[in-house]
Each structure stands twice: as C-alpha cells, then as structure tokens.
Length: 150
Image 1: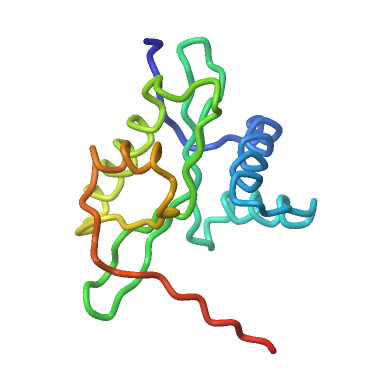
Image 2: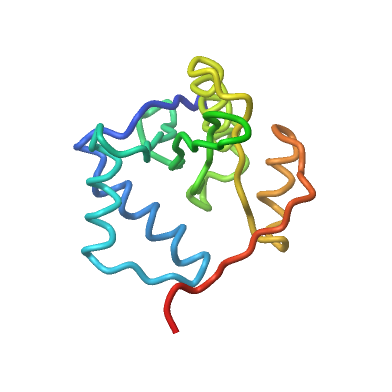
C-alpha cells in the first residue's frame, strides 16, 4: 500500500480538486455548473468562510481524495465538526486515503476542541459505510430536507 499524506488544498490543486469534486457530484447524480465549482473553490480558500478542504496524496504526490468539512455551531453543544463531502478516486479506493482523510479531520477537531465530527451518507453507500464504521459510531438521527420555495 502506498503511503498517503493529507494536507489542505493549494491553489495549484484546483484542476485535480475539480475532477474529484465532479466525481463526487456525479456519484450523487448532481450536475455542477462552472459557477458552482468556482463558488466552492472560493469558499474553501476564503478565511471568512467555514468550509475547508483536505486533499489526500499518494507517495508520488498524486491527489486521490478530498474532504470538505467545517465547524458547525450548536446551541446545545457549542462548536463541533461537520464533514460535508468525502470522496476518493475509484482507482485508489482501499489504499488508505479515506482513513488518512478522516484521521486528519479527527486531529483538526481535537486541536480545535470539537467534541465530535458528524456527517451523512446515503443508506445504500455500503462501501463508504464500512470505512466510516471504522472511525465513527452511527447515530439514530434521520435527515430531513424542507424546500424553501414552492
């Protein structure tokens, strides 16, 4: 297994990040416009915004995975982490990238005093869930989405 390292996204990572984020969106049948890609990339690099991006790299420097996460404020629990997106290039799954990404998010959360990091996944995303089960405890909470327009 190749050594995987994790670090924040850099400006020169844009094109590969876009490929990976596009793969993530396609997995969930979401089509992103150029403006939506640009907005996400801007937010990641704007210190006034909360989204952050970590990239997983193989030993030769190839970017093979991404994770978008942020601090989330809870009146009940204070600040905690939330993982919005995590994706590993299908050709590199099983190589340790997801473990490295989640490990780094755990490290960041501990350093920032978050009691935990939460995320959602599709119920039928069995491969990802098996990885998540190594790092976290499944909660009993369900997710709802309420449209804000008719």
